[in-house]
Each structure stands twice: as structure tokens, then as C-alpha cells.
Length: 148
Image 1: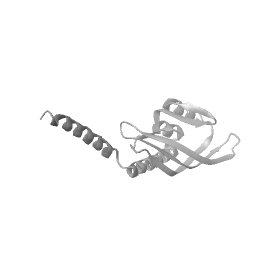
Image 2: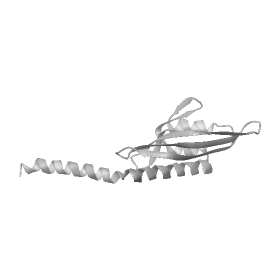
Image 3: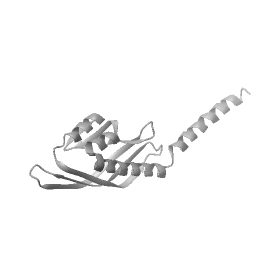
Image 4: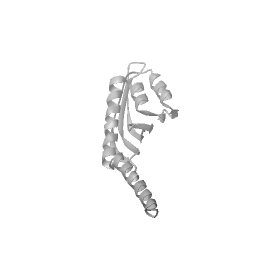
């Protein structure tokens, strides 16, 4: 029995690791979760505004790059988007590519975005380009961005 105990412990350790991998889901499942999260994020931005959406989908330590500056932390990101003075702000995007880590706890997307707003003179300003977002699965199972 004493000789079997170390083997039993080793078996239990490997079994628990396998269970954790299985509960994390397959890479395809995680990719679909991230795409779904991106779509929900975009819909929230359209319905509730950029400040609410970016703050909601940001991790606590998220960083965004805007106008050549880095803005760190959920609250600072919210303040940044709340401070936008343009009218009729619209941001639309769609991921063209998504990938996840083997452990299914980190992923990234990239694709095209279209940004438009009305400036202080009443003119419509249009901008478009590419975005890149890094996503991290949180302890509660939700995906939140850590870089955008």
C-alpha cells in the first residue's frame, strides 16, 4: 500500500490537470467566446456609449493607446471616453482574426474599425484603420481586454 500511495497521488495530480484543461474549453470554443464578446462590446458601445462599453469590457489593469498616449486602468479609460467632446460619436469594428493560447486564458483579435463623429464646426469626420485587442479570461470566466 505504501508503494501505491505515491502513484495514487501522481494519478490524482494528472487527473486534476486534465480536468482543468477540459473545463477551460477547446481553442475553437474560446475563439467563439472572444468573437461573441467583441460583438457584445460593439453593441454596448453603440447603445450606451464608448465610456460605458470600454470601462465594462476593460480588465482592471487594461491599457489603451489613444492619440499617441497610453491610458491605464479601467477608471482612467472611462474618464478618457467620457471626456470626448465630439457629437454623434460612432465606433464600429469587426474582428477579422482571432487566436487563443493553448491554455485558453489569453487571446487576441485584429480587424478593421470605422470611427466617425461630428466636430465643433458641424462637419462629419470619418476615420478608419485596424485595431488589435488582447483579451484575458478573468477568474469569473468572462473575457476582458488588457490591451486595445
